[in-house]
Length: 106
Length: 114
Image 1: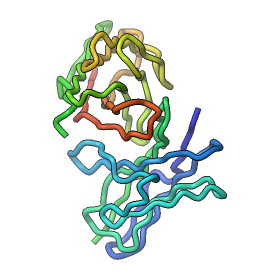
Image 2: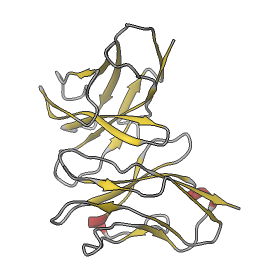
Image 3: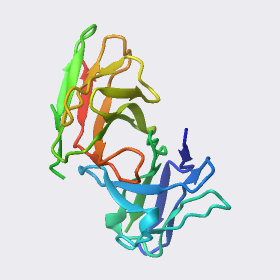
């Protein structure tokens, strides 16, 4: 089964600092990967997808096949970025990573 | 995203009791999913269904059962065999599993033991 791992359960940064949420996958081929976000008291929702190569809310994620990673990055974190972030592969059995809680301190 | 409705929002179960969590979607999605969310453990897949009248076990299916009699509905039953049912349950759907389509999630149901 396609698997992803998010090694950090909690990531705490100060406002304005760069942030990188790590996601590693463990299968070959050309995976399609997503990042989902869950803000406090809101639904889990799609943040961005690899195939779109887009920047959402200042976040970007690049697929690195050599390192089998799909890290989520933002150059300047904002307090409103505080949330739970999940990395997930597309597939018949969508298995999410364990999630990383991002806390952006003022 | 009002396309997926989970009910109830809070549910309490007595020992030895089966309870059913409702999930309805009006997005015309083929695939539906049930996840369990525990603190510090992220999301774990319980069951998923790619099409009506078909479903597959996920990572933690023991103690749970599902049905998919209608495209728009995917109820989850937490049976008495599930010894640790207290958790937050999320239902999701996607237009078709395996075609690079993201999932849309409901608001969740929080199940607690009395």
